[in-house]
Amino acid sequence: MQPPVGEPQNSGQPRFRDLPIVAIVGRPNVGKSTLFNRLVRGRIAIVDNEPGVTRDRNYRETHWAGKRFFVVDTGGLVPRSADTIETLVRKQVQVAIEEAAVVVFVVDGQTGITPLDSEVADVVRKTGKPRLLVVNKTDAKKGRAQAPEFYELGLGDFIEISAEHGSNMGELLDAITGFLPSVATEEEHVTAIAVVGKPNVGKSSLVNRLTGEETMIVDHVPGTTRDAVDTFVNTKYGTVKLVDTAGLRKKSKTDTDLEKYANIRSIKAVDRSEVTVLMLDSDSGLTKQDLTIAAYVERSGKAMVIAWNKWDLHDDAERQDYLKRVKQRFRHQTYLPAVFTSCLSGEGVDGLLDMCFQVYASWDTRLPTGVLNRGIEAQIQRRPPEGKGRRFPKIYYAAQTATRPPTFTLFVNDPDLIGDAYKRFLEKKIRVLYPFQGTPVRIRVRKSQ
Image (cartoon, rainbow, N blue to C red; front, side, top):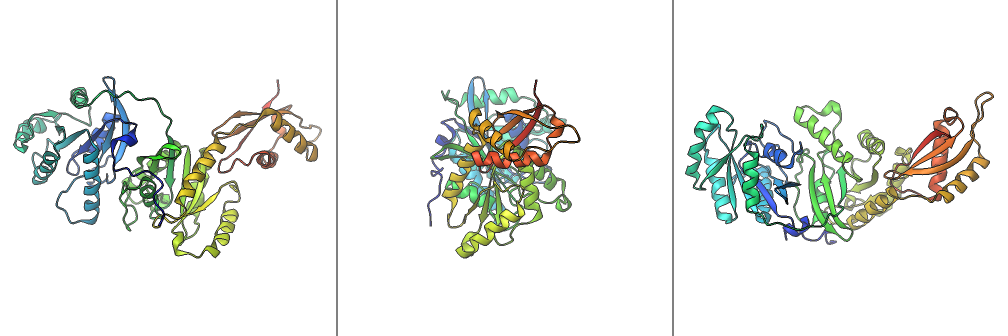
């Protein structure tokens, strides 16, 4: 078995550039994700009335009063449950508490104290960590009236808030930062890699393998991951942000609002990433949904790597057959590299990370103008663009006008005379000059002045 690529992450805070961590904990459905979104100033975590929507740890950096820190959202804690998912959630919460500088314990002011609140309070008390008791949903009269009973939890004073409406957020943030040290940190670029694919192809297993710990909940039941969750890992390439996403389903198969919202969040995860790993299941092969996902990544202009997972179940002699299928089915994206992996054994995971950074480099590459124009001119002489009637196109010169993705602009006498077919031809020839592996290439046409 190969060792995990990432450094072991049970050391806690150092993976976050030495920023302290604030963990939000509590029983299910008390408003933890709503508070998380409020603290990090964005709609990051999925919020739904259905208990148990949040399952994995979700980290975001934020700041207050000149102090920067990470907030981690956690799933609902059910300390003594034997349910499989709730047991896995409990492990995630325990890790978040262990690495936290401050624990924010959230309760529901409208429902009052429940037996489960008392059990969670015992867990928080035993940590010995600095803690804040936060009574949520006190904007309603009932919540304000019942708030005093939370003294019975034995955690001392509490802060009354409404995460939904933002009430008393300043007081809460003042209390949180009162426990935190000022940390001088240099700005560091963190490469974002989104892991996408159909449900149950091994996305969370890949994230766990790269981080070297059970960062994400893994279960054989499809749909275990509900949200796009960020995880940071230290690698030989520096700090990397891995974005695990919910399995993307066809629109016709998203039965609930929660599943539809999870699809939207997964798509947005691609938008805020730089590299996308499209995971395929070597058992089920390529499907139309895989092609749809790949087409969206290309339209988004992101670099991409195909990862064939569960390769430990197949003979190496099958690799050429699988690669042939990739070239046939992704005939409009022949620039995509494929890596064979097994998240169970670790096979190929090192190579997958290496490939992610190779395509990232291609995505950010700029061709010298002289090399580009000499190459373009040679191809125009071999195959000039066709005219329309008595109108004949003339390409004066080309320039790379952008990276991420590489974008080339042709300056011509009449843009209408340069069709898509000729642009695709030139794209292929540009890739001869430099392959731009794993990244789309854009060809623009402008009238020369």
